[in-house]
Length: 361
Ligand code: GLA
Image 1: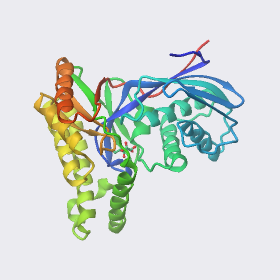
Image 2: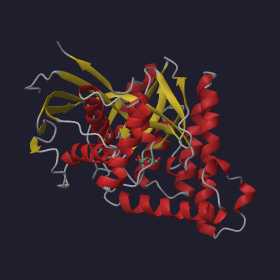
Image 3: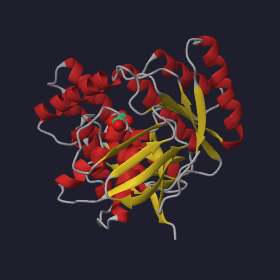
Image 4: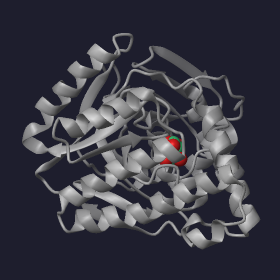
């Protein structure tokens, strides 16, 4: 519940990645959408920063020249100040309250959503003149340099630039993007496995190092520029990982073409192929995610795949709008039977606009 009405209201979505798994940190292609599930920030400019979050029931205050991390959610706020100050900006403080319909830690990018909410508020309230692309790049730096998570730009970009009823096809090297309409008769269901992602960071960093090493040996910056023939001299593991990324880049383009044509059958098949490939050759899935994906397809989904980093977290299923509830319930029932130790949950998400800031009064 909100207890505070700020001079500014920020609505900032999360994201779901439809396809393009583990391609962004090699400057490949991705196709995420911004979700209607969102973070809301009510904020009023002031000298220092005083923020609270109803989701975790904690509050923090700090002057804008005290930016030491404290290992909690407020680091995403502090990190925005740290990065903006490095850029020569000096926005003032604010009194703010965060509430959210976006579940925290469920693979829907609640951290990117928090970063962009703060970045967009500071940009609006203190006239920083930052474009959405720039805000996404700076928020990625909050993760990389301040929080210490070496993610790519997909999450921040989707959250900043999302478009209602559209996915975004993004070239993460040039940051050129194209909105791709999501047909109205299709629904996206996110199914969270209830598997926590404790080991994600180390596995993620390992994958990243492996493909970066491979690209370095090839002398190529973007995985988009690698062809299968380039890979011959690489050691087997580097080759297997990078080969997956190369195939995934191609699938993003195929999925985009299919979605544009309203060919949901082909779109769904491409998602399923992507999941099977990331599971077999990038080793980023787990038994629970594989189970959800296969059951979703058995239950009538057009396609399904893990979304986000993997190794637990969430999968998406692309389903007929009218069957969304029954398919989601059927997956959940079989999942609970097979994995009684986990507590799964599901959400239906709609493609939404990127972060919005409005000024009241
Ligand atoms: C996480 C990262 C993204 C991306 C995905 C995998 O969500 O934050 O940058 O690398 O994993 O596709």
